[in-house]
Length: 274
Image (tube, rainbow, N blue to C red; front, side, top):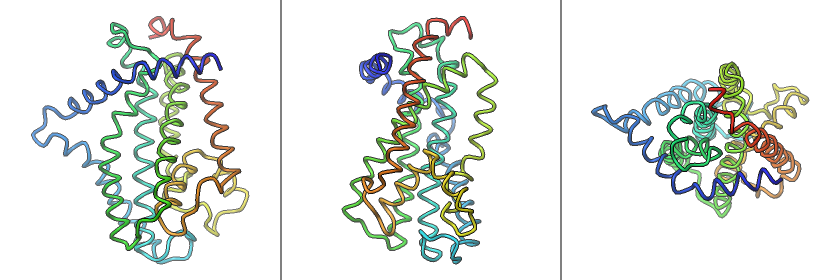
């Protein structure tokens, strides 16, 4: 717990610098291109659009998804899931590589190394909010009306950011210590969309019960399904999912404990490993 408290204090103290670095990263990403920020959103928008077209037309009218009614309901369901997953996937990949790629520059500044992974997560937020706005438009267009349940969006957003940071403390440290880890990690993330309920509901009758229950332990599933339960049909309050909440926050705490410990133990030797 001592390491966790120190890490969180460093993050809070470094927050103004984290925000400035995130803005700088966004400004520099496509500075040389004529269309600028357009390319920041074009790639995920194209991928999401193609996925929706492919899977919504095929599965939207079926009965395999108990959470989406008809084609319009499935489009809203898959759009929200894909926007959320694409953000988390990109943030997880970049934050895992963040210390290894930025330590040479940031070590010359008065900047806590524990805050470096958060800069990549915050950098991805601008694209996420634009894509989320498109998903919201899709949801409203599909005749889903706002409700009081929408206020718990902020709970799931907070849970998502805390999970990403806790995970990044572990992955960014291991990437420095064992460079081959990053390649394996990226490979796992490529299949993450298929086991997180993004495309096909894990409650589908085609899934065996044992497999369905196992997939629901995935923290990505908890967040994605939480957003769907908040914004789409048949919403429920998050505190009604007692077991799911305990499992998710238990995983987050374990990641924070492990990540804080190994980060504090090895960070004075990061330059030697790199």
